[in-house]
Length: 231
Image (cartoon, rainbow, N blue to C red; front, side, top):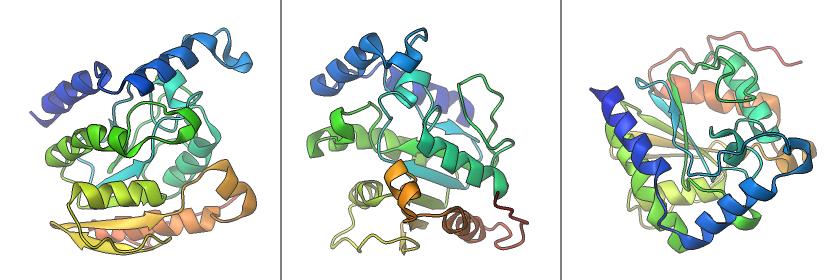
């Protein structure tokens, strides 16, 4: 039954055209393309969440990347941020492989679900507050359907969006490793694995893995019991 309702949600997300600016941008990018992907067919639609329907952990990002998920149709798939994220999910026992290149690459998530505050690629990677608020009900719907007890917020935007979704006032400050309990769930802050953050060392593989292992422990898993290796 949960899988059927998640499929219903996916259909709703993929068909959404509520935000004219985002619709125009995502579709224009899908036509103009990036030179490196000129022979590929872009997804060019809103991106649904994906993962394990029995997930205890939701990984909550900002929005699809213009030439990442807007191209592949799956969050964090086909871009540098995804390379960093899925490598960590593999090391910490949430993914069956360390890479995510396209929707049919065999990736499977165990105990985790990947989502975002905004489902369409925004210009300059910056959704407006109105666009965020228009999209957040989809994330709320997901959380109603999933048995998740932990939400890992990748970046301050995702942290603020999650707090807004739970109607938290005043908002606790975002930070890497920050935790806040609300409505039976724990929000965990994590620096976004953007190229800017990974290239400068603001977030390292060890830091990302520590957050995911903490999330596993909070969800009832075996925190710290995994063997993690960094290349």
